[in-house]
Image (cartoon, rainbow over all chains, first blue to last red; front, side, top):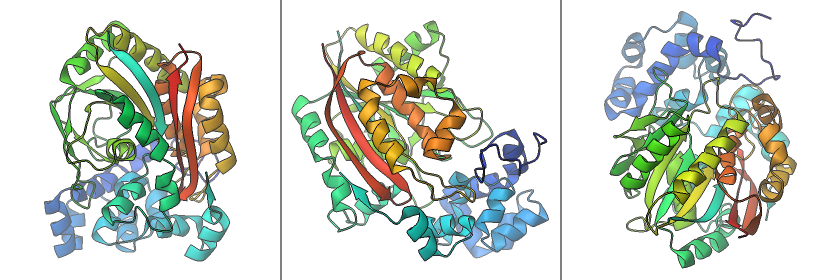
Length: 120
Length: 280
């Protein structure tokens, strides 16, 4: 297991945002961080390709953003707290982003992971 | 001398903020969650603290990955709500407890904690939501705030024991502060949740309930757990719970639980609170 292998999770299916991920995802997260300003959001909405071209994304990262492939963005070093800002310009519920990463339909995700309400 | 009035541990889930903004406080989905905070709101309103020290993590809103302070301390006069992508939320600005914050900066550095000192800082849901859960939605906040920000996103994050030790230091700062102001300390984050990877949606209500039951009376296990054990038990973002240890570490060994509440799932998170006061 190499320390630079982003797929080498110490805890199964749990991508800790460590050196390897922070390195490989830096440009992707920086692109998403740009969406925390009104100017960045307007630029993304006006011409997504031109906005993405401002950042040194890999071709795979660019394709993952264009496809709104959340699992792939995370696999390529994206951190949810940054890439979630994409869902502010292209509205996507957080639970759908969760379901997509789990490889489930939204209903299956809700039923198997979040379904049982507990209170008090 | 300043008085440590109480310690609060609470979630700071952003969906709570969204629910409030959409007027869903009393909806079928959210009412049971919010009602669970009413006893704590009432107690705090009766006891009228002057200062709230809020320990939270920024979620990629005020700090980017170009510089990641492991610990940061706000000394600003005024904190604006951050733009998290949807524009700043319509909550009042937060007034800083500037004098106490600088006193704490001195105490931290003398005590070998070295925070980044922040004079201009927007604060995200990590501070906003706990304030709304404890103080409601007033025209102006009834307390001044001291933000303490902990990196819980990029590894290495600080250890649970370090958070506890920061709490011990924080207590010394409160006890040595020469005013008669009343202070509450709010450790925030959690409870169990995971937003990233194929285990996204992981929650652990049994572990959450045990945490709430034991954080006051017998927190020893939580000090000695590793960060990886937090992630396994509470999910990758559930490791935010280490910030409750700052609150617990600043209180007496013997504490009394005034009220607690648990609800799951709030969006994708086990959510809840505990309100503690010192026995003595």
